[in-house]
Image 1 (cartoon, rainbow, N blue to C red):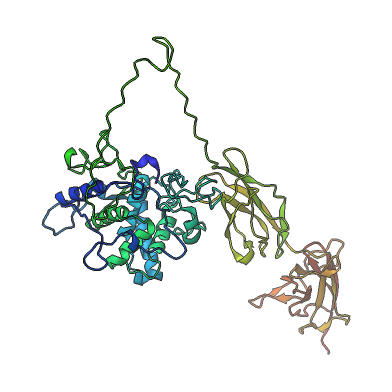
Image 2 (image 1 turned 90 degrees about the vertical axis):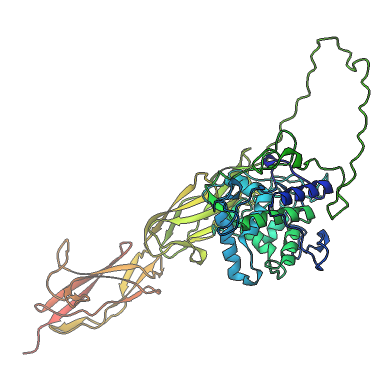
Length: 575
C-alpha cells in the first residue's frame, strides 16, 4: 500500500456519499458493481459479518488500501451481446509474472484444499486493490518487487496501532509494523501464513509467488468455500475488515471474471490521481465517465455511520477568517522569508552486500566431515551487520560432497551479528576440488565463492596378516592373501590399495611372467586395484600360479605410500 500508487483511503474514513456515488457511477455505466451478499437473504452483510482466520486480526492490519474503481467500459467474454474485443481494455491486462503467480497459487491450493474452490480472479482483485498488481508488474525474474512496497506505519494515528513484531526485518520499521509486499501482509500475519510459492527456500512477502500463495491459504482458512458468496465475503473481510474494502474487491473480482489478458511485466496500468482531486481513474480518464459523475475522493473527518451508503448531510462551510491588517512578520517589504527545510527521511537499513565471514581452509578426507564451517556476513547500506537476511548455500561442481542430510542446497538466515553458518559439509568418495556458493536469496548481489578440497584416504603402514608360506603348483591357485592397512596406528578403512606382480630388480617394474590375477573378462592381469574394508583389512582376488618354477614377488602399495612385498612360490608339477 505504498503512497505512490495514488490516493489512499483509511478504513471507514470515506463518507457514505463517496461509496454511494461510486456505486451509482458503476451502475450508470453497466460496470460490474457487486453489492455485499446478504446473510439472511434480505439485508447486506456488514463488516461484523466477516470472520478472520484463527489467531489473526486481518492480513493487512486493516491498513489503507486503494479504492481505484475498475474502468466503466469493461471487457466482455465472447458470445455476449456487446461485441467488444476479447482482450478488453488496458485495465484488464495483468502483468505476466503477476498473473502466473495468481494461477499457480490457485493450482497449489486446489491440490491441498480443493473444497475451498479458490478463484485466481479473487487474488487478482485483492492484488489490484492492495498494490496495483505489484506496481504494474515491476518485479524481477523471480517475481520479487524491484523495490519494497510498504504501507504507512501502523502507529494508531488514523490507522490501527500495531507495534513492531519483526524488529524491522520485513518492513524496515523497528517501532511500528507496516503492511509489506504486493499483497500487503503485516509482519505478524506473515510469520504465521508466509509461504514459499516459488520453491526458492525462502518465504518473502515481497515476492508475488510467495505472497499470492499466502493470500490464497489465508482466504481459505476456516473451511471456507469461496464459491459461496457469503464465504467469499467473509474471506475478504478477514483480509481487511471494511465494507468499503469488500465492495471494491468485489467490483474488481467481477470485472476480472468478465475477461483479462496478459501484458509484459512492468507495463501494467497504475492508478492515477487527477489534478482536479477526483478519485483515481475517474473523471476524464479511461473510465469513460464525466467529471460530474465522478465521486469526490476527499475523506471525511469521521467514519460513515450509514452502512447502506446514503449520503451524509453536507457540512456548512465556515466563513474565511478576516486577514490581519498588518503582517505578523515585522520584516520590511521585499524581505525574503526563509522556508523551514524539510528534513530528509531517514533511510531504512537495506542489504548491500554479503561477504566471507572468515571461513578458513576447506579440506577433508573422503568420507569425513569438513572441520571448518562455511560462514557469510550480511552488511547493510550503512556498513553494519544485518540480521534476518536469507542466505542460500549451494554445492557446485563434479562432487558427491553434500551438507548434512545429503542436501546440495540449504538456506539459513543471518543472526543478530549478521552472520550465517552453513550446516556441516561432508566429503563424499570423489576426490578433487569443488565450489560452494553463498548468495543473498532472491537478490542479484554477487555471490561469495568458497573452494573446497577432498583428499583420498591414506594409510602409513600395510602388512600381510597371514604367516603361512604361499606356495602353489603351476596351473593351480594360491591360498587367499590377506593384509591390513593402518594410519597412525588406527585401522585405515576404505583406503585405495594397488597390488602389482613385480620383477626382482633394483628398480622393480610390473612382471609379465609368473603369477597373475584375472579381470572381469577372465584375462590375465598382473596389476589390480581395490580398497580396504572399513576395518582396514583386505582379501586379494584369486592368484593363479603360472610360469617356470621359482619365487615371485607381489607388492601392495597404499594411498599414502605404504608398501609391503609378499613372496609367491611356484612349484613344478609332479612327474
